Image (tube, rainbow, N blue to C red):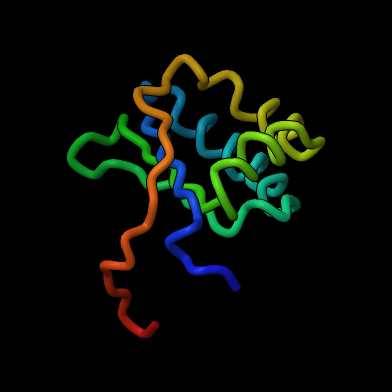
Amino acid sequence: MPDSRTHSVEIIRYKVPADKHKEFEEAYAAGGKHLQESPYCLFYEVVKGVEEPDRYIVRIHWTSKDDHEKGFRQSAPFRSFFNYVRPFFGNIEEMKHYEETGIGWRKGK
């Protein structure tokens, strides 16, 4: 397995109105199945703000930025995934790639 620091972490920050929370979460639950089909997607999660419940962060770990942009985005799973999340494209506040630093800790890992 390659060094985890070569992976790309995509962070997508959304602001979703309260009346769309359920629809947003359902879109990612259904669309996430297509992320799982991709050999380029290693992990994804959707988290919701506690202090600001209209804020969501989606974190997707890709094998690399190029694999995400040139592999996944050209694939059938991307088209299927995007069909689910497309209604929320206008709610994106940030969509960027980050590199892992190797600094961190998770209990039990």
